[in-house]
Length: 261
Image (cartoon, rainbow, N blue to C red; front, top):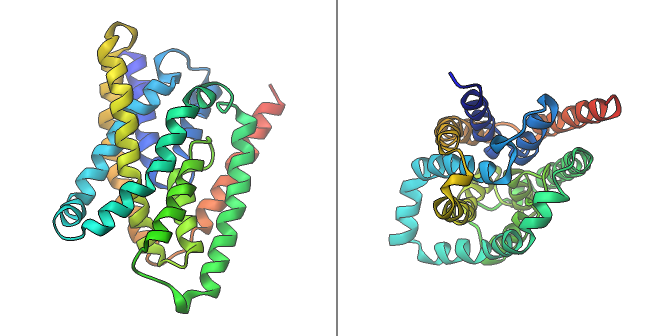
């Protein structure tokens, strides 16, 4: 098999697993090509967005009943979700070039992994201290707060699921419900980015390796489905701490490699 296809399949699996676990998929997709010195189409933001399309498919499969309910019965919540996606949409639209260049940096990722890992620990402590007041329903202000937090996920190392679940905990939302809302909220943003990049590929197909995009897309969809099911079950019983410790360990490994180059 073509080695580039194997790279695309591997990165798709990594994307699917890390998109929904609070450990930053973008950080992993930048770091793996950096560590192994992979170059070309698999080390571009366009490839990243293509495999995000795979995770979009896994979201739609996992939550299609929720979306049908939102469209038919809970239209107020649907409006909350759509309004809450605006901050992330605007950030992605206007800061894309900055992310493509300045933020794809190992040291930036180290800082993000550690700082937002600490924030996750504080959120868990806040949540435990207010557990008797936890909410199972997301209000408009909750949605807006979480939506603004999602915009920060543009920075590699932050993690979309991590920052939105953390924001939910600070709003005293039940941990499992915060994760579920996080996944629903991410769907329009990932979908918008995927469509935007997809149009670029359609307009200039000669600039991209379509077979790599398809391989990454499919592997991300399968592993993403597994990750969603795992995290929703995990958060019913356990806090985010395990993922925080992983973030700290990953930051140490990245810094060690960078210092020894």
